[in-house]
Image 1: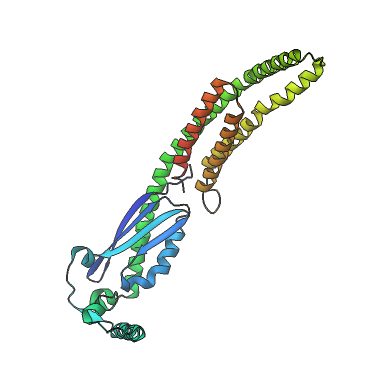
Image 2: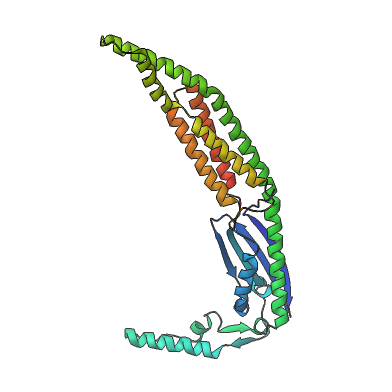
Length: 302
C-alpha cells in the first residue's frame, strides 16, 4: 500500500554551543500542504531551507514545526544578552512619528522597546555558526523523517480500513444489482395494469403494443443499471489507487479518493431517487451510510 496518513508526530534535538534545541514536527489533516514554523529569531534565516525540506517530504496536511531551546523551555538565564540598538532606534523613531501624526503624547520607555522581539537577544543564540545551522537542519530532517515514518505506519492501517469500507460498499452494490431486475419487472407489471385500468375507465380502445411501448418508456426511469455500472467503475478505480506503488499525482491519493467518494455518493443519491422497491430503498440507506464512513477515512489520507 502506498497511502499515508496526514497525522503524525516527530521529535529530534540539536546542540548548538551551550544551547540544546528541541525540534518537534506535528501534522494534522488539511486540504492542501500548509507549513507553520516556530523558530527563534536567531534562526529565522533558516526558514526557507526548513520549508524546502518539509515540502520535499509531504504533499498535504498542516505541518507545525518548532525549534525551542532549553533556555526557552526551562526559563533559564543567559549569561549575557546583546542589544540591537539599530532596531530599538527605529522603533523609537516610529513611535515619535506616530505621536506627531496623531497629536498625542509620546509614551515609550526602554521596557516597551525591549519587549519587541529581536531587540534583546541571548548571546548564545545570536552567535550561530554555519556548523550550528547545519546541525539544526539535521535535527529538522530527523524530526521530519520521524513524522513521515509515523504517517506511513498509520497509512498502512488506514489503507486496510479503506479497503474494508470499499468491500462493504461493493457488497451493497451487488445486493442492489441482484434485486434490481425484480424491481423493474414488478414496476412494469404494476404500470401496465394501472394503464389498462385507467383506459378501461375511459372506455378507450388502445393498441396493446402501444401500451407496452409507453410502459417501457416509463420503466426506464426506474432502471438504475447505469448508476450501478458507474459505481462499480469508481470502486475499481479506488482499489487500483490503493494498490499502486506510488501516490497518484502531485497531491497524492487522498484528494482523488475524496473526489471518488463524492461521485459514489452522487450515484447512490440517484439510485435512491429512482427505486420503487422498499428492500432496495433500505439497501440504498445502508449504502449511503457506508459511503459516509468511507469518506471519513479517506479524509485522513495524504
